[in-house]
Amino acid sequence: MKTWFITGAIGGLATSVVRELLERGDRVAATTRREGALSDLKQKYGDQLWAMTMNLKDDQAVHTVVDRAFAALGTIDVLLNNAAYGLYGAVESISAQQVADVFAVNLFGSLSTARAFLPHFREQGHGQIVQISSMAGEYSTQAMGMYSASKWAVEAAFEALAAEVAPFNVQTTIVEPGGIRTNFVGGNGAFGAEMTAYQNTPVDQIMRQMKGEIPGMDVADYVKMIAGDPAKMAHQIIARVEDGHGALRMTLGSDAYQKIHEALAGRLSALEAQKEIAYSTDADDYQG
Picture 1 (tube, rainbow, N blue to C red):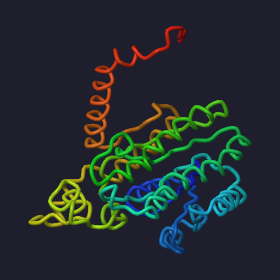
Picture 2 (picture 1 turned 135 degrees about the vertical axis):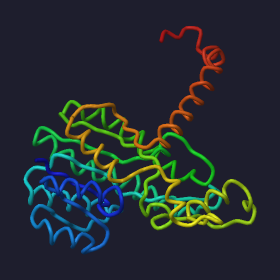
Picture 3 (picture 1 turned 90 degrees about the vertical axis):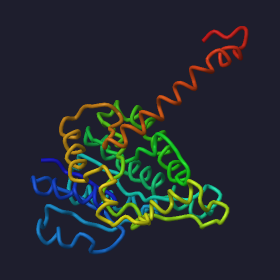
Picture 4 (picture 1 turned 180 degrees about the vertical axis):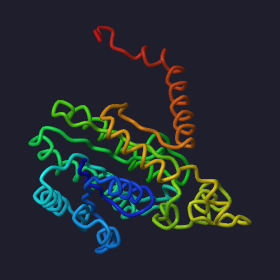
């Protein structure tokens, strides 16, 4: 039996993780933005579920909740940083406040929670961090620039953190899901201003798709265009934690595999084409 701490513990992927963990007998400390969001699970599982509201934009509040969780539960084995939301629109159309808000949750909230956990993990001599990123953490495209920016930043920060905390017997896994059949699209996303300049461009088309506005297609058909089954993804995340070993990054979904593979292959090809230029700019006495 393990004890997990999960942020953003409502929604398709997180709910699937929480339900599988509780069903198999693990303890879960779950945080949400809204009071009572997990009342049905709390009623069913009682003390097996420790639930608390937490404002990820308030660093001190995050540390307070984490400290309370350790005080109540004693040992917490796994931190699952799940809380995040999407932000879509042309870079030009997204306000400075929207950028600040998405980074506050997707990046800074995850970092605040990790920082709050690390002293406890060191004291108990072990821990695992599971950081939910996105396939968009490996590539960027029209209408997703600022969301991808937040996830690229997550990837960079937690890649470094993983190496830093490994000597303390703390393992880190960055999970890169593709599309998930949850309310993440449309129901839990923010959008930049609609600008007439971008009408009938890929930006306009992607924004409408992210809002679920696809002419001539009903909801059932739209859902079939989304690859990820949240229950299957949850099971693989739990299995990785149980195994205790694996690559730093974990890709989930055929769409994620395909898009990440294409992005990495393209970047590597472009890099190789510039090798001669890169080497030509070295100082004559460089001894690398």
